[in-house]
Length: 214
Length: 131
Image (cartoon, rainbow over all chains, first blue to last red; front, side, top):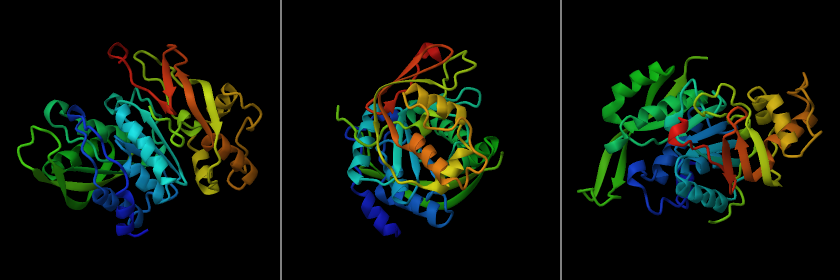
């Protein structure tokens, strides 16, 4: 499937109806999702035939895209049942050929000693984590840590370019090697009343992490 | 609430879920109570199933099948020739991918804590006093 085909296909995925500020629910645009997924598959072969985990899946655009690209099994994880309801109806609308599931869980509860999911069951973990603003500080690191536990091979994620050095160092602490695949612009439309500008372009790194510890 | 007809828990996911209640040392596998299940045919991919065999806990899978009333559908142990044994892989595929748990619960074997499954989604959220 070509990049543009995938992007068009993902445009049918419905976003959050009432995004929740405290969870930093921003939609992953079809363009961003398509770029991430298309690169993961065509450059690295990390989607087709694989067991994929969509961490902080929200309404499921990355899960749907993975399934369309041939991931045989995809598990979405999110804390918000309203998002998961949209996740379910989105997946149904697509009539996917591959198995997709979801669970409601708090990713911040993952730790090496007390997981709710056994380690390294997934080939690939995908995520567009909350950046960790306002009262949510550190949440992006918790996502990264959880991803490092769940993945046996690779993790794909988006992080603010301004935090790059920090991310790379933390990734090493978590037993992963970071590679910045691309620099992108993430346009966050003013979703909430407190946003002063109409829309804001944030520079993000599209990063591929490989698991280095067995 | 809109009833889902596609995204529902399968045993491949049950196989990797474990209890993370504070103080619990042996929270695996979770005991399944299935009130509403459905069998749904899905595409069989022998290469994928073969790879997954090495990552799942086989005894937990056979136990799970028993718990939901599907006895005698799986061998007690994974056969040595599993990679090329198509009949076996088909049985494993059916167990892992084609049985949907729509309503029920997953219970921590040590603490008894129940994680509900509603509309095909297991809810693994803990209360403040459990973390």
